[in-house]
Image (cartoon, rainbow, N blue to C red; front, top):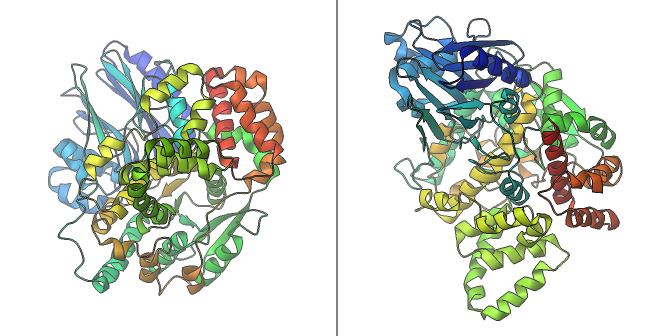
Length: 629
């Protein structure tokens, strides 16, 4: 795991590029405290800071071919590197035992055609000195980040936005349209970022910068065909093969030359991961969970029970309102972009790193693939209602929507958006992960930002792309794809990377494995999803290793008691954040409306709106920090 950076410009001298790259590496040092390096070749300078996981002693970066033609900086892990190494050995004299040299050899021989062969999480920059060409790419689901900004006939790229800012080569100006998108989705969906002119290379895409300055960005991976010959012939065969595929991805994700642990929340997904790690021979396995003083939502007890049953060395990280308040400055500085989520990952990662592991596995992705979210239950009901709803006279529909928009319940206001804008499965799925209902979002924006938001509309910016990609998909696949490609990619995976890297921890997600998903995706929904919310396929496939009480346990969302903390320990931070002086430094927001949002939360006992209030507070605090930098 690393932080990677690069500057390509025929107009910047090598000394200026080296200086910019050195500052960028320093900004990403937390991503790789074990080593760092810089290489220049022609108009390109590449740099990295390394967290040494595989072949810690030899596999240093940047890595170059013996003839000096090819140079690589790489962030991530290639789990099938040993298999690929055997295939490449005839034409390459390997001098290391790691995955970086395998990636260098494969790209040197096959170029971008090598990408579909990679099983892992990755973002890399590859320079061909002979062709004077830069190739950069990102893994299928965007587990590893990559951002870039254009320069004159060149570009600057990095693993984190803060590193781009540290280069001083591109003005980091906040984009009002991106502020509006954040209020809708808890994130700014790729390829946009919070900053003008800065691009988030989308998951499953590659970028090629040619010698003449032309930039070509295109998709290299997409979800498999909805139905394929790999479908199991029967449910019994599906269950048997699912267990084999799960065991295979768990084994692959344990490849490392350093200690590997796991997050263990007490839910089915993380418990299945830990159980399969133990079944694969992981001895003296360390597991980590976040606990807090709220018995209605804390998963401390089921996590302890799972750890006891599975024989792990279990560690608990207790998080209190006082602790969050005391560390809020560090937490905000760990953000690479504003987010309303992820603080639990920040503390879990701290516990794992302090507990002596450099790598931890997570159960992220189980809900998206096996139907664990309410969306798998709620959206079919809404879809059935769309037909009768469209038969209601337009004037009456408008009156109902306006009444719902004025309701105090966030659930009612969200229903108003479904009824006002959704016409099919995709539009329902697109609206499912909206944070602020449209009317409320627009009210919080300044006139300029509001005009841009109205021009972009209420739908997710990837709507047309997803519709084309999922042309023959069934409803469950549509819901699953939207969960995978929006909330999971743009929020959960992004936060997992940022907050684990803040503690120099490599976090791996074995459910989000291209080989596993390629097999699972075309399987019949009745087998893969079963009854929505139960994740019965995963429970049945791991019945011999997962404790029965976990398999039978009702799904419980992991939620820190933020509403209570916001009224007590975090209140001073929020009062300052929502002050007139603070909001005056955020010209993209309508200060009176934002103040009212906070006052409404503060004056009532209704805690259901806490996440929206917190998301806006984080945005305000982050933007002020970014403008001051």
